[in-house]
Amino acid sequence: PITQVFHLILVLSSVPMAKRPSMQLMQLLELLVATAVLCCPCMVSGTSRFLGPQKPMEASTDTTCVPLANQGTHATVDIEVGTPGQKLSVVADTGSNTLVVQSCVCQELGNCEGNNSCFLGTKRSSTFNLSRTHFGQPQQVMLAFGSGKLSGPLAQEVVRVGSHSVRMKDGLVLMIEKALNFKGRFEGILGLGLPATPLVPRKKRLVPHMQSNATSASGNLKNYKQAIEKLKHALQPYARAGGAKPFGGRIGARSNPYSAITQPPPSFLEQGSIGRYSICLNQMTDGVLRLDTPPVENAMGAIGKVHWAVGLNGISFGNSTSKVPIPSTLCSPNTMHKGQQTPCGAIPDSGTTLITAPKEQIVQLMDEICDSWPRCRQNHTALLQAAEAARKAATAEYGFNPFTLTIQSKAMILSRLLLDCNSWMNETVGLSELPTLNFHLGGRNGTKKDLPMPGHAYVFETKPRDALSLFNKIHDTGETVESSLDAAPPANLSANKTAMGGSGGSIQKVCAPTFGVMPYNTVANGPVWILGTPFFYQYNVHFDLSSQMPTVGFQSVEDEPCGTCSSSGSFVAGTSGIGRAVGAGWPRWQVGMPRQPSFSPGDGL
Figure (cartoon, rainbow, N blue to C red):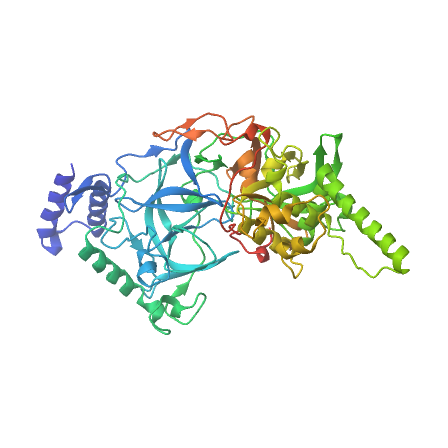
């Protein structure tokens, strides 16, 4: 028993030095005590706390189900950090692989919004430890994303996601400075991206016990302020050379020779030895993050070393008038140059709102959608005929054509029709008259997969202001879509009147494509497409990093419904696509600024 070991050490300690046992025996006894302490619950400040597991716990073979809160432009997952747990809602992001939590110091310094939940380790968590250099200074981590940068110290802590409790011994990032173009609540990121090295899950995993007693930073005010001051004091070296804010108040400032800028720590998945997981989203309700999922068939080997990337070997269009899909020249294997491995790359990213690609490819895709959609093609043809008729009439009257009529592109006509969607879309057919986009993917292991995306999957309903902002970024013509609609001839279109309102006021809803522009080109894999949240509504996306070749799998929600999570954390199968007339192809509703990819194109694949 531990009490007898303690008693033995006390007796031996009282023995004169000359008669004591060897130093090795004393160290062994101390090790026995330490081991016993780690296996015993201790009382700290009247609260039961476990310094370690009572017994090793085998990694569960059952899938853990964690709800994903649908925020419209992205999804968040509730995690608990520390002992007892402090709850934060963080972005579930397959485009990055670092766990970031907002520190309460960030709010105290004015770098983060004060209405968000935040984490406080000092005096609030018994398992908190700030990582330090050999000089005793906190280790600094800086992260660059597509939407900006953030930074903060590295810390060890216990983190719980669903039923998985992981001691982050290699660290997580405590965000204390933020320069992100991110609207709304932001309390951190759960990075679920591709690790730098393949992960082989252990058969057994020690999981520290953590009470599910979620707390916030609004407890005892006096203790809270004392803890803030203590942590700010620990981080003071960051500000030594540049003012009151950490890092001199500038992201990326390397002004302090005593603080170490270190590499980001391994992800929650790596530190928790979680080899497989999947993500899917539901309309108007929570999506699902499943951990420890079983392997899926026909998974594609990832071609990326930094991201979950696969090859994009072409896009084709399906419609009601043609049984054979019409191939696009986009990402065609015929366009590959010598040494190129894939025509294009594709990265499934749950943290990106839209489907993005370089501008020229998005505009070409919209042109070809118009060609494959009879309504759009006929309107464009009508514009051409009207312009030709005007030219002939002017030439006959004046001997020359004094008018210059600019015929708008097919992509612009598509934009106008979608802005006017409420004049032709009805509850019966929805967006089913739009062509289906087929994305032809391929993996490094030779596996191929076609992903059909019907009209309601790549078009959403939104507010006029959000739609116009999106269109202006796509077209980037020096004039706004709104002004071009004012100048364009009607040709049976009422988009200006409908989208902006006959008297200048805006209507409630319009439509827009789920496309965004992002310049991302690689030598080996061509232009890169980001397959954002629209794909996660249509597919259960599976990620497997447990083998030497990480794989990505897509299972249609028609075959494998997204389902929901029960209160006990188990998966509940059910139908996907909750919402109005989804079966008839009605678009989902989305508002707000789209979230950009969380990585920089300069990283490559």
